[in-house]
Length: 228
Image 1 (tube, rainbow, N blue to C red):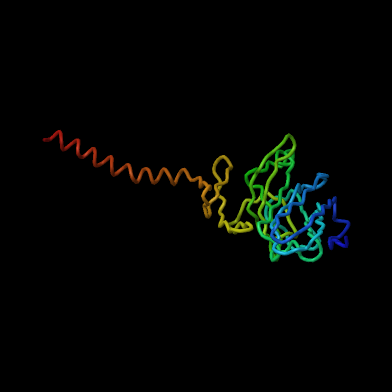
Image 2: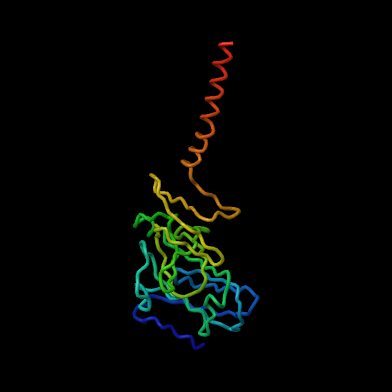
């Protein structure tokens, strides 16, 4: 294996490697069983064949020395993910890219983090929030899965949003985050078959618009009937 990271060695807190055969048309999953970083696995559908390929996950001490700008929101961890040395992790080489990562419950509690806003961001000329969802939890960690078009520089964040598009591997979610009195985020975008858009005030307005005229008609009918 000749894969060498371009990251400044002094900025790498810990790293883990996994090796698999990458063959076009066959889904591949890299599990990081040592659990020394915040990344538990990555998986994708290869468009090209690279045969035996090593993936390196680098958990960083701070923002990557290769990235010029900082992501929005409160940052939990900065991470680099390198797949081979021949472009196996580029958007042109993969589809359906996924990353599972974990966040310490103690960090969520100590930093007063809104768990529903935890988002993986990827750097590609600019920081881009990725579609992220919670998948499970245990006594110490909450686990999330994010869709990604490629593998490079990442940041795990509490992303409050600014109207920026949230990208997945196969879809674009045009997202606005709005906050209620309880600090919950309502996600508005392209609702898929199983998506739910939570907007109780909008539903109430529709109900009032329908029921008020109906009530007036019924009341008018009752008054007219009494006169007759």
